[in-house]
Length: 217
Image (cartoon, rainbow, N blue to C red; front, side, top):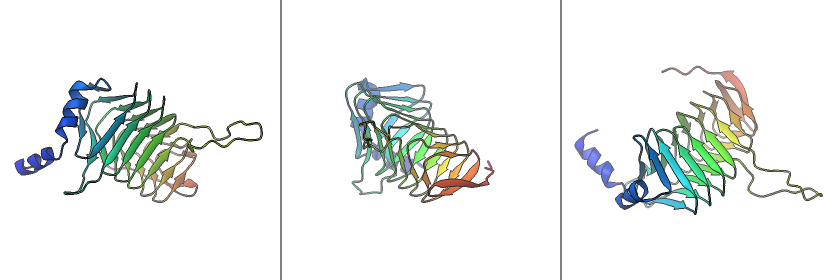
């Protein structure tokens, strides 16, 4: 990267927020060579008791925003929520991470493209080197209770687990209880509500594995 490109990139960072969240706020804990990097228009809402943990890589918020755009990216943690980022993770413009009260999201390292939404009511785990395409939704709950005649909730939250080196295609939806094995690819416009075998291509509604894949490099 040339000097001019570096200067342009640095000029896009919200330096007031950078200083606050990296050096002042007690709600962000950094370990090793790790920084929270909020680009302009990054929206970060941390309720009482909420905390972000970052290690072994930077956490970029509202990255790749087009020049002159007012687009925002959102990171919202409700009361006592936890967000763990264990490696380089990029949240592009118009994308959202939201963690509800007492819930947690754990990310190894990921590229999260524009308009993606990751919303946890209880627990979402995303592995290392994951690619989450545009307009992907990942939910561990329906976020509206359905009760039976005995007033028992029949759709409680169920953890979502995405393995390492997973690619989730455009406009896919991961529902509560989804479990995707390492090295899997979820084709565009798929709906996942169960288990996807490691190292396979899956597609459909509901998504099903239909072929094995081998990653190179």
